[in-house]
Image 1 (cartoon, rainbow, N blue to C red):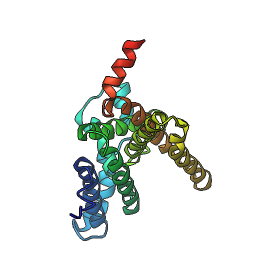
Image 2 (spheres, one colour; image 1 turned 90 degrees about the horizontal axis):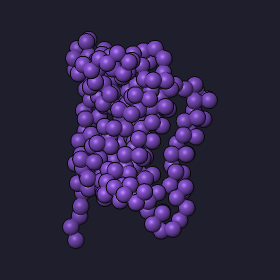
Image 3 (cartoon, rainbow, N blue to C red; image 1 turned 60 degrees about the vertical axis):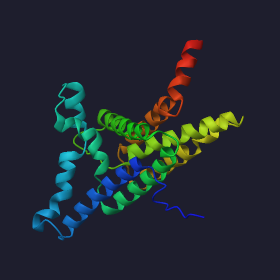
Length: 225
């Protein structure tokens, strides 16, 4: 019996996304410790956040003022690959890998990538519209929550096909949101949970179309109305 490598089992598009997170973090961590970049490398993380993270000010320029310059638009996706610390990137990358594999095993590679992008963009927009000042949004978590939305949709449809209680599919997101609330009450929180929730909602909604056969099923339902 041939032994399959677990790495080979990961969808290539998910591997590529995780590798970008890893490459960025290794570069920033190496700079922070002085391994590369000399004295200037210590400030690479701050510089990366300034150039690639998204903030309410960025959203204001794009949405309210109609500034569609590439420097601003890129941030709605690039922020997902920059993290605040090595530990932050470790957790974000691990969640992206685990949930991305589950979704990528079901969705087409292009649909998986589209899900990542639209969830990240939705999270950035939601955060920018409710947060104040120049507080930056960074990290893969809104996109990860988009994958959680897709994961929930997959469970929701499977449970429905089996005649079970579909509300059970929402246990994971309920647990995670409760956990975020507890941490916010204990340690103080930011408005980043809004980005995560938006990523989940858009991920779940987009899965109606992006899931295999989803677009056809949607058209059938619309024609029946």
